[in-house]
Image (cartoon, rainbow, N blue to C red):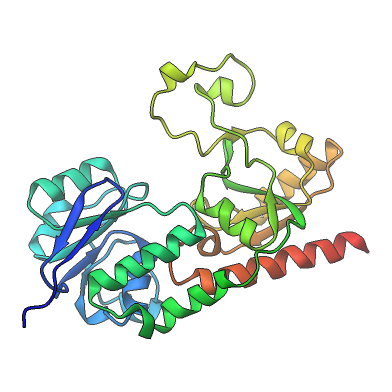
Length: 299
């Protein structure tokens, strides 16, 4: 009997059809490369990006096709994949369109919540021909989100860039996973304003009609604005910007000069931005960090 055809609607609202599980997979997304491996399909992974570095012991031998934003489409095509995994935010529209135009089967993801991430992981299982119910990686994620969501216990600011400082609002995966861990994103309701001068409060913002469909989830902020919201904790991840101890000292000095005693913590960016199997370890790790901050502030 021929295997059942799978059909899924992806983040670009396209129906992606697979006649059978793929024998050759190229992943253009670090967290999805990790997922493919943890779902037991490493042998079918024939291509990845330079930033697909986990699981470190096994992906080094897989051919790279460039960066997530600078994919060499010709390299992807040369690998003759049955399935290309892409992400609406991680990869450029041009890359995705070129691959689709070339006849590749491309599935584009865009989970912005923890539960959407788990739902996508289930979709990935089906695409790869893996039984979700028998996957340890899948079950670990299901178990984590089945637990009661922690009450907000710690006001948190997550910074993702410097010069200018940038953060993320409640419409992002990073903000949602913080909520699951018991944090409250102090910039949750803050939309990015255009142009830059408006975002940092020195000019009038463009109206909605002129902003159009530009991404407003990553506002640029000032030290004054961070201090005014008085978070208990500021998280400095190691990606997408690799914050240093000097960055942390500079920020903390600036905040304290403005009357804000926020603690600074350096965190693995994968815990905040890698949707998929990693959430099983990320939520407990972030929850422990937030609880530790509260205990220390109470002393």
